Structures are given as structure tokens and as C-alpha cells.
Amino acid sequence: MHGYDWLAPFYDTLARVVVGKQIQQMQLPMLRHLHDRKKLLVLGGGTGWILPHIFRVNPNLVIHYVDSSEKMIARARSNAHGNKSIQFIQGTETAISTNDYDAVLTYFYLDMFAPAQLTTLITKLKNHLVKEARWLVCDFESQTRMHRIKVQVMYLFFRIVTGLRTNTLPAWYCVLTQSGCIVLEDAYSADRFIRSAVFRVNIT
Ligand SMILES: C[S@@+](CC[C@H](N)C(=O)[O-])C[C@H]1O[C@@H](n2cnc3c(N)ncnc32)[C@H](O)[C@@H]1O
Image (cartoon, rainbow, N blue to C red):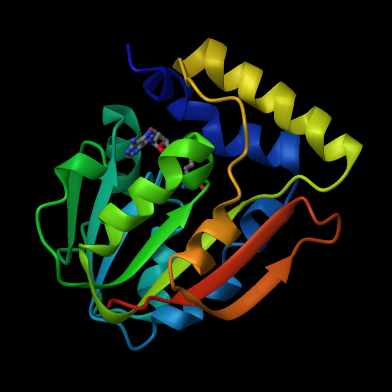
């Protein structure tokens, strides 16, 4: 069984217990950047608890929702409440077949890639986006000794449960800005463990 399939029934509760309410509170305000978007790619979307919030911001958005776990996709489908403008794709970033997204949302997704892989991944994902697309990211940042300990415990947990190979938080913010993405909004949680940012993607 895919490790995330096993986690799916209690993933959201676990995240809230371990990281706190801020894990969801940091994701929601950035969604307003989707209000004028047409087509959104969600990568590693998980249970899809966020979908009703996205529809509220922009009911006309077409969404392609990619997740490698069958059980996560099943939960997301139920959280979409029959909305017809969303297409569910069980697979990874390699399953993306179109290149006309004007927004991409990667919440707690980039942290699953080793630092050495991230630049290549971001370059590949940019190929699926149009000029001036928006990229919404929310993920961990490790700034203190306590953060580093928490991050190590989390990576160990995900290694055991899901077989995750990496054990290092990549510098996702730097990689995105170095790849030409322009920061439109940037926010930290109170303990600075979670960072949310919205970028305008430069396609050269
Ligand atoms: C840490 S969870 C984050 C879920 C959600 N974005 C959230 O913030 O609650 C990562 C999700 O990505 C999925 N996943 C793992 N590797 C993936 C990949 N390479 N491509 C797409 N989804 C992936 C997992 O099944 C899981 O649902």
C-alpha cells in the first residue's frame, strides 16, 4: 500500500496535532491570488480539505488535481462535492500533460524533494505554466535548533511510513527566486516554522 494511502484517513488531524492550527491558517490567505486565474494545477494536494476554500475564491477556476495516493484522491473527490470543473489525476508531476496553467499550488509538496532535485523539478514545472502564472507555496523553513529537530523527526516519520527518500529540507524559496520567480507576497507563521509565498512566474 502507498504510504500516503495509509495516512489519508487521519493525515489532516495528524498535521494539526503535530504542527498546530497554523498549518491551515498559513495556506488560506494566499488563495485570494487565485481570484482572477483560469486554470490551476494542484500538486500533492492531499485530502483536498482546501478545495471548498478555493472554489469560494474563484468558482470558475478549472483545476487539475494531482496526487500520487489513491486514497488521498478519493478524499479530495469527496471534498470537491461533485464540482465538475476539477479533474483528478492519480500520479506524480510526470503525469502532467498540458502546459497552459496560469496558477500552480504546491503546499507541503516541495519539501519531499532533495535539494539537488529541486532546481530540475522547478524548471520542469515552469514548462507547464503560461507567462505571468502565479505559484502559491506553503512549506516549512528551518531557522532554529528546535525547527531542525522537528524537521528531522518529521522526515524520519515520513521515511518510515511513506518511504520518503530525502531527509533535508530544500531551500525552496531561494530556488524559486533564483529561477526567476518574483515574490508578490511572503508571510511567516508566528514561530517562523512555516512560510507562505506567492510568486509571479517569469517564463523566458
Ligand atoms: C505532505 S502531504 C501534503 C498534502 C497537502 N498539500 C496539505 O498541505 O495538506 C503530500 C501529498 O503529496 C502526495 N505525493 C507524494 N509524492 C508525490 C508526487 N511525487 N507527486 C504528487 N503527489 C505526491 C502524497 O500522497 C500526499 O497527499
